[in-house]
Image 1 (cartoon, rainbow, N blue to C red):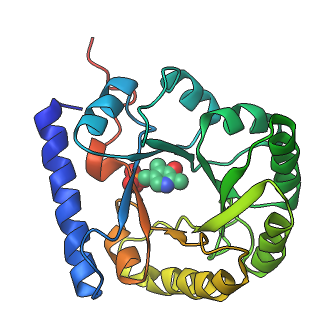
Image 2: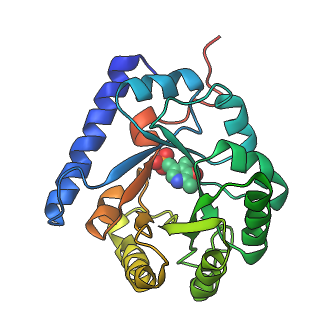
Image 3: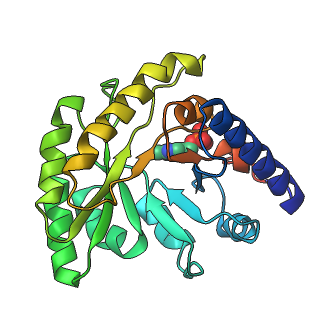
Amino acid sequence: MDGSEELKRRLDAVHERIELAERRAGRAPGEVEIVAVTKTVDREIVDRAIKLGVRHFAENRVQVARDKFQSPLPSGVSLSLVGQLQSNKVRPAFRLFDQIESVDRASLISALEREADRVGHSASLLLQVNVAREPQKSGCDPTEVDELANAIHNSPHLHLRGLMTIAPLCDDPRELRPIFRWMKNCHDRLAPRAPDDRFNVLSMGMTNDFEVAIEEGATHVRIGRAIFGPSITGLESP
Ligand SMILES: *Cc1c(COP(=O)(O)O)cnc(C)c1O
């Protein structure tokens, strides 16, 4: 990663592409939130992004996040978990993250409710759906969504805020339109059943496909490389 100017240039370009996609979809400019995925950069870069106005961040591994976010984030800045969560990492995850986006099974929902009850505060969750049923990927099967959403609604300390998906890798992101559309339909179907009106997050779209995701109704796009550049892991300067 280069200096702050490079970061600002990339961030401005992402904002511009988001706004164009919002316009194409007839949505209000500024409606879609950026979640900056910081798994390839260190804390110094995160702090620079905060200075440039980024308010939502995400990591995919609990242990990495624990090291990177030892010093607390300023108020108004949030951190989400977007990677698979093992039940034995629920305790540190609960402490670290404002929202867990990768909830995909009943046993994890029970473990989260137990921990929330133990520490005495609630948790915001998204249900991750593996729409294309890719065997390697986490996320629940599309047929399990209703049952898992109910399990969360029935957990006193857990609040379901919406849905998340990771679309398949694809050369032409337009081919992913049916996946994003499925998510939007599913979201609209579940929203009236939520106990409050805070079921309003549809987290989908990454560097390769965020514009199509926005056209299909994403409220949050999770972007790593377009903001921070390609991963520099293994190419560190001496
Ligand atoms: C890494 C990651 C992203 C961001 O991916 P980019 O292609 O770098 O934009 C988004 N969501 C999840 C779950 C990720 O692990």
